[in-house]
Length: 399
Image 1 (cartoon, helix red, strand yellow):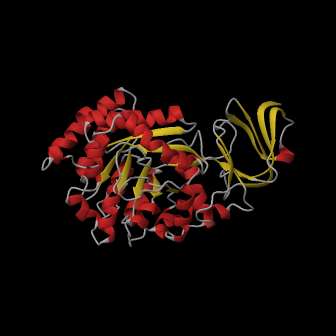
Image 2 (cartoon, rainbow, N blue to C red):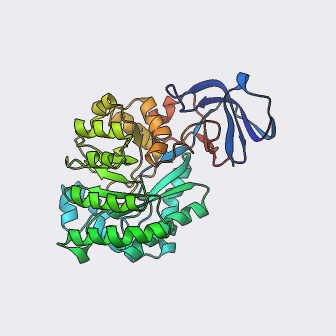
Image 3 (tube, rainbow, N blue to C red):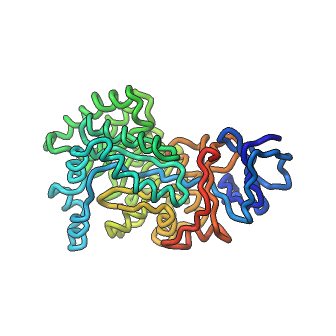
């Protein structure tokens, strides 16, 4: 059988199950950027490859997926970090005009090229750790033109680097100052004008919202979801990060791709997510950075059999993190996830969290040939080490 590239003499963690889908004597064959075989070398058909790569016993996993980021933004919030160190809370900083609104001002002042230029180093750090797909949210423009600009900048990242960029519209991230005291007016703008314009221009793959005491209510979020659904855009939700408002249950009602953060998720919310197939995306970087003490209910998620994804939540205020490998360690040490849960969380389950399970996330025939080759002796090393990058090679769409 003819193929473009053959990776032989490899150990595979296919993530296709059971467990990590370990293959000790494996090979991967690809043609036209797609996997044509991934499995045991002894069971493979005879291949004639244009290029054959001897992996010398290295491990191959699917390319990693960072399924929740705010990678595109203007400015930084190092000053707020100092305030937080001095004892100010997330809510206190936000109510004093900091937080998201601080980044909004810097983002509105930035050109599209400014946004691309500032995001590229953050993106490059992730790519250097084997990331081949990244989700990028808007949400710091909080008006149609700057939100469009953010999404166009995110699209440009995928034009300038070999990476798949999934774009999420997060117009309902915070209340902009021009709508102070009028959240209903702003939600009407997002639902009636911004979502239709974004959808018609094809700028977003999904719609997100921040459902929280300092964000938007259940009913306001519902209106956003209704508008997204009318334009056939799947939804996601920042839910139960600071309090239990029932956001996860609302997300499940709309068969959301994911509900994210979830520190205050209750049993009813977990059960609803399981029934809807909604992924729980956990963000240990934000948990660590804001010194949160309320752990996500991992045992409840396991009992309900909710798939768990992990992501950097890369953002300027609460998780200025550009290492998905460090997230793996944080998921294990802070949230007590297993090695298997962590690795599935940045591959198979992360793919589900962005609606791309049919395309990426596992090493299986027909899927995009997105690979990470590692200089490790066992997959647990990817979770165990901190500040150490064992990536040997990164492959995106077979290249």
